[in-house]
Image (tube, rainbow, N blue to C red; front, top):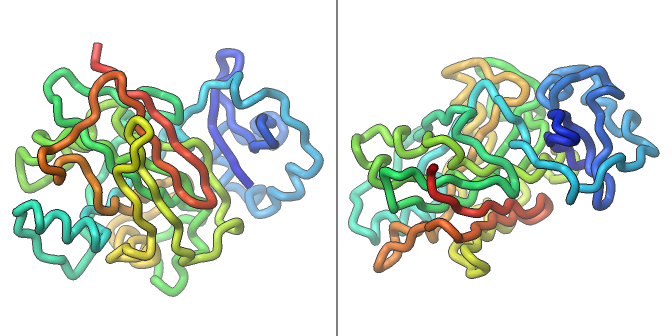
Length: 286
């Protein structure tokens, strides 16, 4: 099942993808947001709730919103792919593998939806792509054991953890380069966890103007999803609708010789097997 947040006739809502359309579920379920639905007992009986529904709007007619427009937390993993770690070393940066997952937080205003613009800020020309698998938390909790982690996953989506590189490198803490507004692409929808076997290796491809710049799969993760959930939930309580961006594989722009970055007029796509394709145009900040 594909669930998405969107705007139709000027009103934000959410619903289920039906063919090339979407059926709104906000009024039918009484839950104003997708996150509220995920947090409710209704999420467990979602198949019965949507059975027989017909689309009430075409996907081409709606404005996509980030899958979870205002998550309480967006937890992002750093250097979580072995091929990306090796690329960092080859670029001359001395980084040791850590024993625990390195993470940082994004704010929700840094997100942008499928077909929405990723905005290159006027202070930088080094806006880089980072295609990632996003995990959406279903059942919340604190101190979640790794062995129990999969049952806390509501679903999966595509993420582009776009980075403003020189701001990322201002200090050892990289969050300043990761939180510019409208830089984190998130969408187009969430595929529920029952559609994807836990631990399945998913092909991930990022394209810039149609050219493949990243091609890998989630089996290259250094810290797998259950470990990320265990670690994050040790620090803070995970709640329904929280997002975990699981890190990017090799092929980022700054590691190329010469470096290559996104510029206004470009289009970037993140495609993940069994999920779909997130597409964002690049624009300059007003």
